[in-house]
Image (tube, rainbow, N blue to C red; front, side):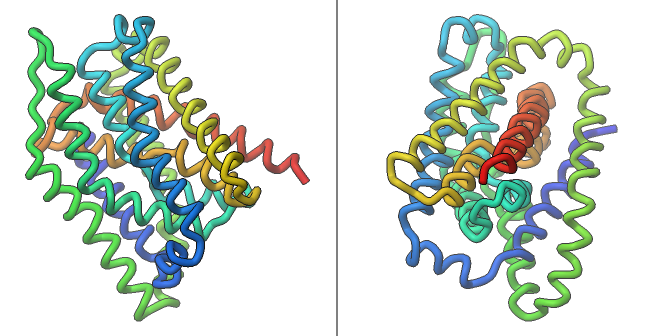
Length: 287
């Protein structure tokens, strides 16, 4: 089974579901409370790729990671947001409105930042035994079709048919997790040997990346004296990446067309959920 036929509808549904939760008031939050929004976007768009690049350049990791895995790690770091972060923010008693705003804004901003950063990354990691090209035009078109249009459609439905949007959202949010589990399962069996062989290095790399990003989210929130709810949301938003988007770009025949590049995103999704579920558990213990 080709994973692209699973991940394409999953990403489209997730983005449509995100649109269903958006309201015009969510975008007003940028003007009403610019500090947490700007801090969150800085962490997602700027800080996260810098941290990821710094980690993969460390000698202990750089010597073990292939060019394809480095590209995959950076692809994950350049794909912030995702509707799951909104659910985690709610469970952690965070600022859900801030989470939705950050997810929507980062999904749109990465239309432009992701191609630029990944074009530089692919050129920087070229080796004699591998040549990876990034068709920027195809990437931009695919992201518009699979992300912007579904978000816009969901947003429109919510504006004019709010009750219908709520019913559809209640269905889709129950489908999302099983669909992602199916995707991870298919990927695991297709690349079982590679994942098992590389899990030690990739698993450690991804765990350090998640911990570093969530830690930076907490540090930035503390330095700027944000509220506890805002801090919890930024920890989750900066730490949680859109693995479905990264897998789609890696597997797409229009872009990388290489499932090996998607393996870091699969491992990231596993480690991300484990770590952030533990974080949500810790927030439950706090008063």
